[in-house]
Image 1 (cartoon, rainbow, N blue to C red):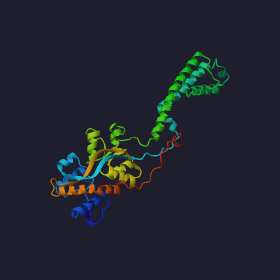
Image 2: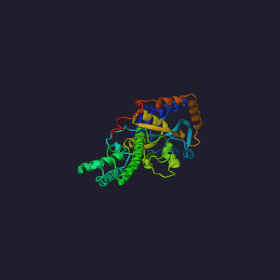
Image 3: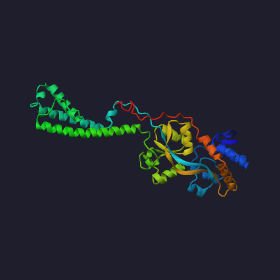
Image 4: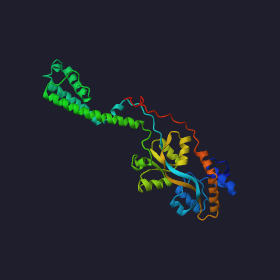
Amino acid sequence: STVINEFGPNTTKLNGYIPDLIDLLQNKMKFIPNIELIPSNTTYASLGQLVEDHVYDIIVGDVTVTATRRGKIGFSNSIFDNSLRLIMRKSPDVDMDLFAFMKPFSLKLWLLILGTTIFASILICLLEREKNPILKEKVIIGLCAMSVWYTFGNLVGYGAGSLHPETSAGRLLTAGLYILCLVLVASYTANLASDLTIAKSKNIISGIDDIKSGKIPFNRIGILVGTAGEEYYLREISSGSRNFYPLKSRQEMYNSLLNNLIDVSFHDTGAAEYVTNNIYCNLTLIGEGFDTSVFGIITPKQWLYGQDLDVNILSLRESGDLDTLRRKWFQVKKCSESSTTSIAIGIESLSG
C-alpha cells in the first residue's frame, strides 16, 4: 500500500486492526487504497470536518459514533464494538516504614497523649508521694520514673504492677486513665486495621461509580480532549465543568499515569487491553466497561459507496472476520502475570 505521512509518500506495510480491516474490505470491494496517516496532533472531534472539507475521502480508525458527530457527518456500520475503561497505575508493593505504627493517630494527637502522660505523672507524684509506701521509698528520679510508668501502664491497659493508688484523688485519676485507655486503644486498633486493609487493597477505586462519587480529585483524572470520553465526562460526571486534567494524546496519557501526574484516565477498551497487556505492564484496567459505543468509518453524508461499504462490513461481521481480527490484535498478552495476591500480612506491613 502507498502510505503518505509527514515525510511524504512511501511504500510500506502497516500492521494492526485497521490495516487488516482495510485489506479485507479491499479484497471484497476491489478498490486500490491510497492511505494517508493523519497527524498525531489531530483531535477526534475535528476528523469529521476533514472529510466534509474533502481533505480525505473517508477516515478509518477508532472513531466513536456519537449523536453529535452523526448529525454532522456520515458513518458506516460498526467496525468495532467499544466501551470506555478506567486505566490506572498498578498499586505498588507496601513499602517498609519504621514509623508505620504512628499512622493511626495524627502528630497533634500523639503530642497530646504525650502531654497527658506527663501531666498525669506529675499529678500521681504529687498526690501519692506522701501516702503511698512504694513511692515514699523512692528518690526523686525513681519517684518520677514510677509515676510515668504508672501512667503509661494504665494508658495502654497494662497496669503498673504492685503500684496502686492510696488516695481518693489518685483513684479518681486512675479511673480517668482507664476510661482514656478504652477510647485510645479502641480508636488505635480500628484505625490500624483500616490502614492495613487499605494497604492490602489492590486499587483505590473499583469502577466508574467511584469516579462519580468523587473518590479521586477531579484534577487527578486525565481526559483526552476532543474525544467521546470527554463528552461522557462532561455529561455524566462534571455537569459540563472542564475540571479534569487535559491530555492531548494517548502517549501523554501513559506518561502522565507513569509519572504520577494523574491517577486515572478513560481509554477505549481495545487499545486499553492491548497496551496494558503488551506495552505498559505496570498499568492496569479497573472495573467493567462503561459508555458502550461503536467505532465506525467516517464517510461523507449520502456517500455514493456508503451502502456497498455497509453491506461488506456486515458480511465481515457475519463471517466472523471482525471477531478474528479482535482476537488477533487485542487478546494477545506479553506482560507476565503478577503473582497471586496473598491474604497474609507481610513483614513490610508490620515493619513499624
